[in-house]
Length: 382
Image (tube, rainbow, N blue to C red; front, side, top):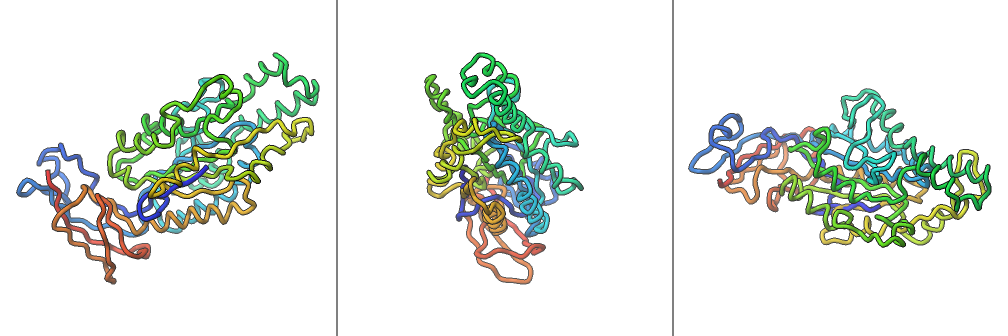
């Protein structure tokens, strides 16, 4: 899968804690006056507040391929994500991290636009979870993925390699396995539309990470049955869904990243895998991966929505570090409460840093140190 960063090549949306919530321009003067940071004067909303660098809000959705061939990658990635989360902690980022899967089939293990539950029953982890690393490590390694892999390995071991073509195998697969029709983009669209458990906050940036050894609907069985990509499977649809459902501010700060099969060399590695905790050599060649073309499409837009990583990498720590760096870079951005504000005054404590405004995004020319206070005042037309 590929990750993309929108706006000044920045990936994950980390930013600042903004004292005044994003504005609904249909609210009355009384609603605005309820906030100490917002008043209505001369038919304009005037804002005056401070933000703190490094204390930004970001909601991170991980779309995890839970098909059988992914257990190896899930195991390798899980401990590396610990560094990723710890780096967010060190930067004092107010994050939420949720996980959904690529299975929207309606079968035994579907997510269908819902979030998986962590071990404590929560739908997302935050810096306040004292055991957040253990919770994440367990959740990213899908039990249904491992169970499916072992079912395939053991069934063929007990019944012979040719048994994969029998009705007994087919019924056993349906009972033990998630769908092989991976639809990560479709799943992400459903999360944005449904916002389960109020995961996506109105005043936080949104970042999406796709993790898959397949492409969107790349299963040969699916394609042979004539099921092309639907509208919600299309890469171009996801940013549009964010914009229409969550608004311009969320769209302007959106980042989409992917850890996927990026080239033919990685694809060959995927297709040579042997399945099972007790590896069954008869399963070699059963894994049918695919280059993540649909996910990689996010990086080919201009500007790109994020960055990509190679699922075959031996250095997940370094690749996740690249994503982490892009998050840190987002500290240069502040989301304002309207696009193209007037009478803007920006004061950064202890330093003189140049800035620019594009729509509702204020971008500094350099990264600000965590804890830096930024004083803002501006007006928005009603």
